[in-house]
Length: 290
Length: 323
Image (cartoon, rainbow over the protein chains, first blue to last red):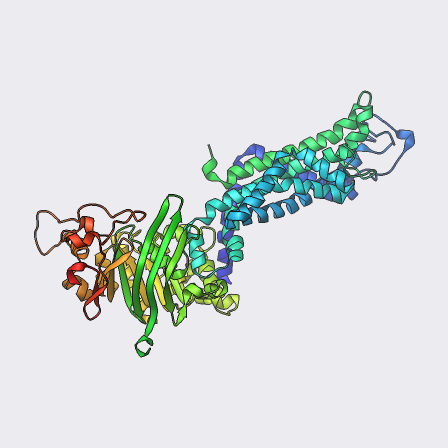
């Protein structure tokens, strides 16, 4: 048992080291705080949002921000603050779920391409090259149009368009790790390919994957918002930030707050993710430090 | 067949080439040797003589492409390794034959604890629960002289000599019958070398493991080996027991190797090195590969390579002088 505790301690100390470096980076901590705040809002949306997100009060339509409606109301008289808070749920959900499925697929493809090389490598990497040659937004629009609107389809579109980045990062890192002697040593003790990839190579290339993932969530959220903005993503009345922007677009001249608050929410979330991701990259790789 | 019963490893005409765009690198050219149970063979040669390639060949670890085992036979315990399936190889590596790598700094996975890494090989080959495997791993650590409390530490927390001990513990964890040590002491400094060699000698006796010791250090060979094979340009040019090689040196190349060693007993002003360089294995000379550097060169050497000649029982020389 004491062994186990010690093991835990050793593992913690590594995390501790990363945390210590991360803590020094004020911007990254700011990003993390913003992110945590938004996650907290999303989790407690039912409790803290002043109105239900679909509660319509036509008598109070298009109201300017006041104490009653902190962010004002939209053209149906719905409280924008509540919708922004509920929107965090949808956006984070899309961001994290679609990114993790995309990351999983990308990692597996990249690891196969990098580890086995040869024909696998050529086929997978040329395919990702093709995907990468199409701008992400256009690719996602094309997929979303084919599949039709809806939350799941938007997530599929976003996750497919995030595959190539991961495949590339993982392939490149796999290539550098697989030729190291400890991999050869693992083969020499009789470990199979599957074991070598997942136990010996993957943990060694986790840092770039984590960084890519943190930065990727931001992109995924923007992409999902763009899809909704174009009417290809979430359908009303679900409060998605992109869809809210799209609906409020017509009123931008007189009721600017209807556009500003969802836009601000997207900006803050993505900013938080990017700042945190950048800081995490520096913290995970002390060699990069300048 | 009777005289093979005690033979653990039987290698015949093993030929390994690396086929690259720039030509065929003939790394190993028809080497043959036997190894009995509990015996230690020293494989000696310069850098690039094909020692490591031969060892990787025995493990079927030649990177393919570009490496290719062209011909030959490797029989371990009566099984031909060159015909083994992928699945059989997984059972073979680490269990029957294991390998100690040259550089302990890179042979351990930096992000797994040493205990994890020793337990991994045990769990791969023996049906044990996690606890049993970790128990055995800690026993192995103690065996190589590292306190078992350090099981949960990472490789970077160990010194070079201790890492090599961990590598040895991994290699011996499943009691392999054959241990291939690829220059296990080259990356270590001399005092640590002596400790590691003593440890290997002790463990070999304890488990009756056969060993192939790859080295370019003739001193290491006398410490630990029973038999020696001298390799030059992918061939074994002379082989025999320690006495045959050290006291009754025959092949001009082996003589040259000893001539290049400083000696404490006789005072000489200059060492007598072997002139020239090892030939490019992608472009070996005709005839005997050693003839461009050989002090005893005969005209025939340029056209014909000698066969392996047994000049005394067990002492083989591949040189036209003794054919």
